[in-house]
Length: 273
View 1 (spheres, helix red, strand yellow):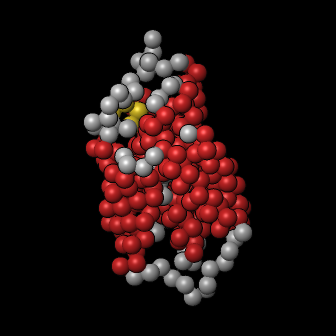
View 2 (view 1 turned 90 degrees about the vertical axis):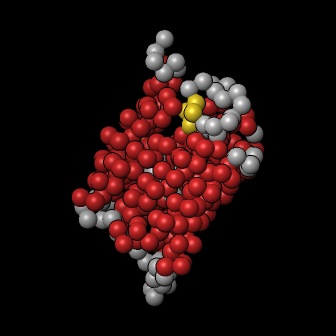
View 3 (view 1 turned 120 degrees about the horizontal axis):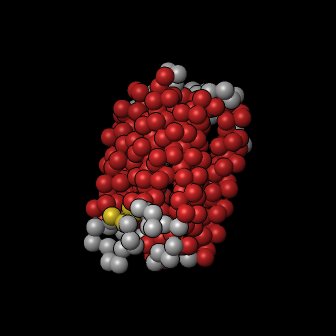
């Protein structure tokens, strides 16, 4: 028996998920959660996790992997001078508070609602990107109270759906006339406080979980965390390099197509739960 107590095919799948998630995290600043939550939901169902736990564990485990992926991704973007650290410092306080709150709310929200909420928000973000709606040329980022509020909303929604926040923060920054490449890089940096706070919240809320699956601590599946993170940190810099070689329209269209596919899967998942 391997040390993860998993079938070899599942180990290969998790490593592949880490590679794809890490690449997309660097490419689009989405932390990888957009891919990992649906994939982990499917894997959890295959392993026989209780239906009421499967999406919640996918969300929590996805957030935990983003802690490692975001570090790798942001280092690559920072080397190219693309991260807007002024935006990071203004959004981060609200994000931390919102992520902690969202992680506690997960405990009380049915899995089907979580999956449906994921689909709705991701689908909305995809539409904004695909139609390439141009913001008002005079629109700028809000002041400190507005940034705190925006950070709080990003944190809550990210913790609820297990994503690094890029599906909200990138469209938000682009809407405020931040260049798409800078928005992607800054979103990668924001993924770290989101993931840290959300992971801590999920650990706390799941400590008294009855009949937790083997290998789980709270809502986090440790073997999946180790395997996915190991692969994702290697591919995130490759994705970041690819992002800076693409033009604005290409990057937005790639972002939108990926989000539509994932929104469709999670909508189906919500219907089937």
